[in-house]
Image 1 (cartoon, one colour):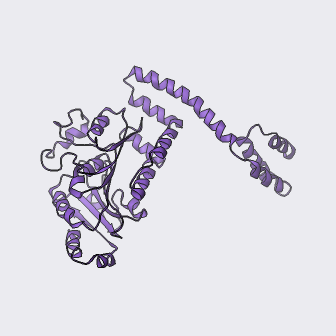
Image 2 (spheres, one colour):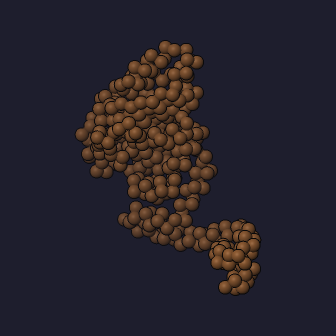
Length: 343
């Protein structure tokens, strides 16, 4: 636990001298959790990240270049970061070594006045469970689990809940404890279990994404940079632009796979299947109108100018440019005329 010793000594220094000792980086193994840290500036936020399910590394995967989930993203945003990576598949950040480390760490972080937490699913549970201990100011949680204590969340009947019963869900940090933290929770309200967990985070701003699901669809959304962009805004500005967020989620409606996954998630509900079918048909028309409106705003004149400039020396290239222009503006008479000439 090298970090604890270093921080204990570091705190005895005057503030200006504390800054001169930075940056500092390192890592340590805390039972079945690996922690990696990077401090650069006491005047910048300190971000805590906890890894989600699916990032199932083992101890033999650890090396000097290994980065826990969220670590590199924090580095790119130039903030201080402490990242926790669980090892193994069934791991809910319950190891006594980790809990002891966090309890010793919390009072040593006083120079960092702005503290953030970021996590998905299992990682969201950890952020919520340790938020008060770490005195987090703002959190960003994607479809987090609030607890695996069956008495507190009897509706969470996922198989992961039964597997998680190998741990003690009565001792400290077994349930969400946000303290004074504010922030955002993002989830799919059509997912019954996620909706139940989300209701327990009543002090956070709720942002709903229909069809996001919990895991499979989450990976799909990540392909479009959905998680990353929201996280970057949160880390950089300590808030989420809600208007931009809603615009970003609106674009999901133009992706066919969005409806396929919604239909799969609601396969047992004939009523919702009918509603989704109607919505899908309406939005197909909306998509066509959106594309047409977008095309109307595109200025194809630069393409035409370049094509005409090089039509004598490079007629094939000119034809390709004009064909692109025709795709963008299929009814433009000039483009059609020049293509007939060159062909």
